[in-house]
Image (tube, rainbow, N blue to C red):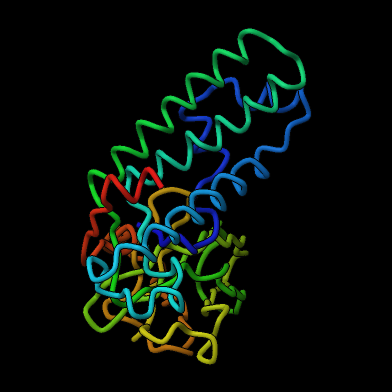
Length: 259
């Protein structure tokens, strides 16, 4: 799972999963979907930080919460749905304000109700936090080298890993096209100087297609190191872990939620 402070925790494609008409309405009404996602993320983030600041010792990180902010909060499935529905309600609020269309009004009411239900489900399930946050890496650096690999496309993602094997959310994809008798090398864009404090190394995932990327290293690569594609080509390694899982859940009280 991603961390709340990671980039692109909600994307336009996530919203299309719930609302197939999103792209056509956005085009016809000239509504910026990304702006609505950012507004929803900011508003919900403010609420979460306020609530976490008031739960006291229910939060094992309460003494450092103002310093940590939301950097240790995991985007669990209920939180992700809340973010999506809040963004959609904001989207259709603007669509309705532009057209006063009853269909948009109905969509607005629907997603406001969905957002409320998702928020309730999230609070019942609790706020997931991690003790050692591993932020999503930036797009990996990829270079083409001489080698023995035949012409092919290659897609690469990376992830930070800690000493316990916990893994961050995957980086965005970087793709290259190899010509005959070539190879590739990849490195973390952050290098060693900007690696997160809790990172013990990193993993690389690659494939010749944009789906089905698998791990190419048998053990974590050292922070600051470069991976080089072996002469035998890519391997069919393990699938990505899918980001960090919460180490602890904080249940927020009904009294705090109403405030």
